[in-house]
Length: 503
Image 1 (cartoon, rainbow, N blue to C red):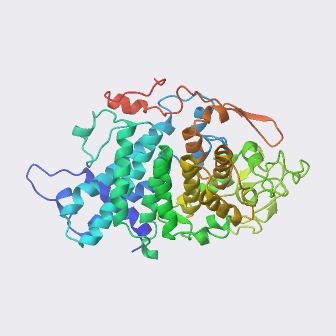
Image 2: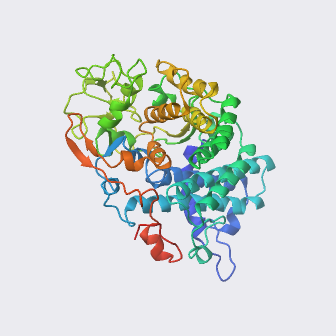
Image 3: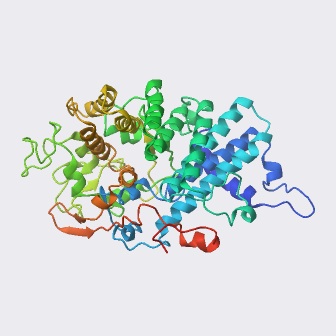
């Protein structure tokens, strides 16, 4: 059975067996699962593991906040109407829902992964498959701990299945302790994960996914040489290649293509997503003029210095990734010419992660939850970018850095980077390349945090395409580089110490 088709049944089963207790008569119910009867067969172990994956599909996606929504916390996108607006204008509190959702969703995933790891040893099943399931659960636990480490800067490190009595009053572990555990899980997982799966098991963690996540974690931890080494293992495996069509990379018909390292799976009618509807209806996210201006001209120069740029025709002769990512006035989208007033807040819409084509009028307009477009959490272009950044920071811009970056640029017919760049010049180009290549994918907010540039780029007005102010953003550098421990978490567990500057 395909994993996506089983998640709903799995989720319901987990809710049942995880909440049941053995009666005072020591009788085992026959009408529902309990711990004593559940962990017997391979099918039950697989169901529990699928339940750990299912947290990726929960409301808010992985980490309790959609990558699209997280993009609005960065300079790339404007938030139409959600809790992120409070954060963007500096009016957030420790009880702002965004923080609580991320904390709660992360621990929900950790708890389910721990449940698998605590109970699978006693299951009668093939030993090799059991090792793989353990590796998948460790990958997921590392993935779910990632926001608690990077965004919150430390949280209780729990390595056993949920137990309220023993876990409800734990203090926070340090960020370094969480980092150590995340890397331990990924190091232990990667040898026992396959390079790929058949179509019936698409969406499961692979060796490449574990190594790529390890590279990301090491990059964010500024462990440059280690991050470059982890990314290079993925590159040298030759398991992944860049998909030839940058726009087509995100089309429904190309899901699971050669560039996808790990993605969140959706399938109608079992699990749908509202990404397309939110972007198309302009109620989630819109690209900012600041992002649009950052796309180079096709000669590889910024529009402030390229002779090909003409302010009277600002979208001509631009990096093709602009048209593939952003809906702008005068372009085609959904078989029609986009008007100047179609996207009134910023003047732009996000095309990436919508299933709609430029020159095709859709036969049906989706309603919320009807899309099944997978969301890519890790793709090969990011692995190349991570390698280039880590290698440049550790040893400078050698030929391998140029090769990784130029491979990405050649896909969209952009020119190679000029030879002879200094480390600082290459750093600037890599950061620019990350912004435009990964725009709309929820990673740029993480980037400006780890680069420590958030106070420079987020204390600014957001304007529309006509230069009119639509928002003013505020970022407090003494406080906002770490998210607050949610107020409700501290209320329930006074042993949790709040991050500096938060109440």
